Length: 459
Image 1 (cartoon, one colour):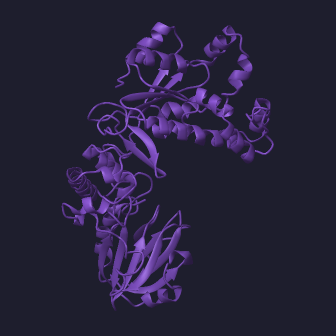
Image 2: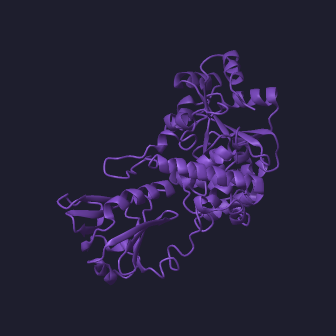
Image 3: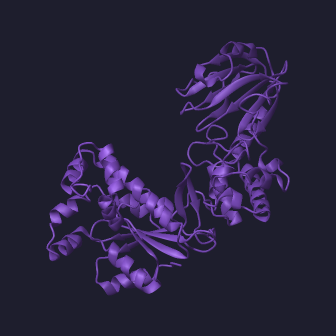
């Protein structure tokens, strides 16, 4: 989504091309673009552009006769000035034909953007601008502190709320918090005045730099056709996981907060009120438990074993009752515990639904456990990423071994290697290798494995 620097870049580019130009014809190709009565649209014909403005992420066009157009680009919206004879593209939603042989085109491949027509005396009083707060560029020293202190959400989520602080989106919040050494998981209410002043100063400098670079072209943003922004080459944090932090060298971590991807450095942005959480994952018999046991013995980390917690769940009468209610084809045994054979029948029929049901319970238990710990803790979860438990972690270790070696290990233990390995056929090794903070290859003996573990820069 274009943030303040990208919208400001559109504003500055369009100013030089639109001011003084008259709209000879207004075409609406996608009626749902308008959030004000559609019959007003034609009244734009004959009006001229006399000014450009921006409030937060909203682009503002001032026209003659006190008319004001307010647009929000949302995910993929773009305004371009083109030659009159330029072909209409599939994603074009509105065209304003100008008096100089050119046209202003609004193009939006996702069709999420909006446009409204208002009068000069009401446009700031009505939606969408009525509740838009000042941006960091317009805030005084204490304003951001006052804006965030009543929030019950994380600082990352709070800074994205446009009624508290406008103009910031995912990119520039991550950059701001990294520069401020603030963990994005922290509650906004825990941010003190000194920290808020630092956040505001870093937000201002980040936005100013991004504006000077013409914004960030991460996906499809272009301030003009064929012209990209260059701020993406100057970003320190956003989108960098699991690359090393430029300050400390520890891998950046990417988690989800409020449904938004969030990148931070677990060392430079450590949360003083939360333990440092290491997650261990990998396919069956790759050596996860061996790695966990070594770390427990050498570093004395408190340990949460997801496999054991799942086994406890199946013996828990409360969970059993909820499971049977959710999956009526399952039943309880005489002890009011789940019948394992019938659980397997359910899993064979509704594997993904069962997994998500179990994952949510284990996630809650693990989150509660983390809240009781201090220092550095360890969680082992074969399906760490599938259960989204990486969101609880500050670093992850993926333990891998060649399939032939894993098969031999299973056979040496007298287990059904073919059946056990088949359970991992859809294990997304490639994806997890790209996401993990560290990848350990366990094809040798324990001494080799221990040397690999010792080489990791773990706290």
